[in-house]
Image (cartoon, rainbow, N blue to C red):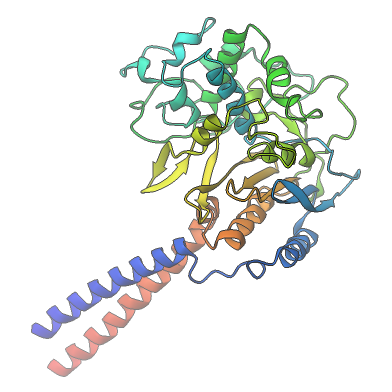
Length: 424
């Protein structure tokens, strides 16, 4: 009996040790190889170019940034050529620039981050809930900690179809992505945890309009885009639109529908690699003595956006309108945002606020290529695994974990079989 007890204890210990070591190794990147040798930007650029050549099936624009300046560019296209000024629809990456716009109103004293969002809304209010809606603050909406349970994701409207008015979309979005509730409402205790809410950014779109008295696109152009030199970028593509707009491809290089959106703040910024490079550069002092924020936002507001405001499983993951991807080895995080939309729009922007180094990848044709490239840059740059890389690889990670557990159990079973044979 003593041998069986020892076998059981040893098996449980082995299972626990394997689980802990494997989980730690996965999160810390112990058995992951960087795309290129660390500290060698030319090697990383070459490796990224090779990855694009092998995997890009649509349109793609890549920019690598050092100290706020573009140092390497790569473009690929399945159709009309793209370049640094080509406009891509960037899906949820739009939220980062929208948050920047909200913070201009905070800087100007026109809104308070910790005031209830309903304070500033004139045309629509959050529906009554079992929770105190006054705890749904601007800060919590920006950081996805407001308890909103819409689950949006927007699918958009096909050409020729009417676009739903913003107020009606907040009540229930008719273009909600599959599986999303679509109604912007408080379904969880505000401040109790993180839950992604595209509807919260539609709410911020309404807030900007109600506070300023201007259409969202007009305010963002006047207060953010033009002052930062993002002169080609727009939240509202006119008809006919400007030239040099990237075609949207689905899998297999099939041409895809160009959808339009009600919640432009959440899902429909059109921007270029060059404009996003300017946006990233504006987060640090310029070479000509220009201040961080370029006078559009004060440096303390930029720092507040990068400060952790939400966590999951003990890891800091979100600031105000931007994602905290991984520690940057300088006391802060690699920050930025990603975007995905059906059938295969994928966009990524990351930068290190300590150095001004970054990466921009805008692409159509693959639903994860931009995010994977940006994740490779984060690991190459810091030695830390990007949070989205962990999520993308969770299925294969669980398979390897399960195989290891099965091997341990099989080994324990074989030992037990031998012990049983000896007793006979």
